[in-house]
Length: 232
Image (cartoon, rainbow, N blue to C red; front, side):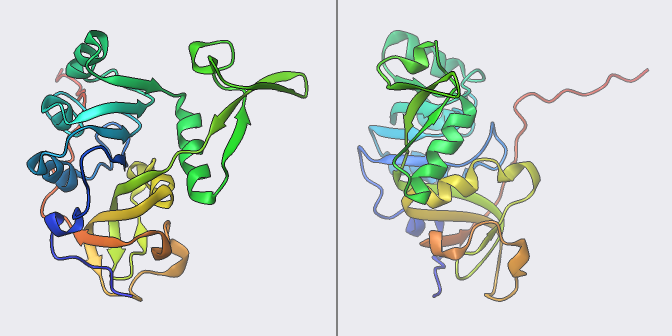
């Protein structure tokens, strides 16, 4: 089945105010840059955003925070964004912080049809408040529920017309789990190839999880904090 759409604006059709979106990436690595920029243009409001982090002030999800399009962030690491901090402390932004491994597993569980699981991560902290705790092998574990989304938007290195995806190195991060957990999954790729081009053993996300795929126009691939060695 050919799942190719011609452009980012056509790929994001159906996203509306108040929806829950999963956005792949880790820091600024492996984020769907074209899709985020299009969401800003669309002016979608009151988004609940599930993402490992919130980008930086002027890039990634920071662009959606700047325009106050995000109502709630469900994330793990948020330390690179001053606007995020301001909105959270002022009460403008709802925030649910989750241990990084738990966030990944909650997304994976959502895609696998597992409603909940127990994990020792977060026990004894605010993360565990209001959650069921059970003891396994003498160690307390916290009940965490699966995460799903109306739309999952991921970014891959290569994809074919049937939606099969290959991620490159660290950019793989949260993308495969989130691709499984969206009711509709949109894949933004650097290179779009004909079906049958990708070797089956190299595919990270099978096309069955992807409903729409398009080739991005350009990718800045910015680095949050570039550190270089000074010349002697």
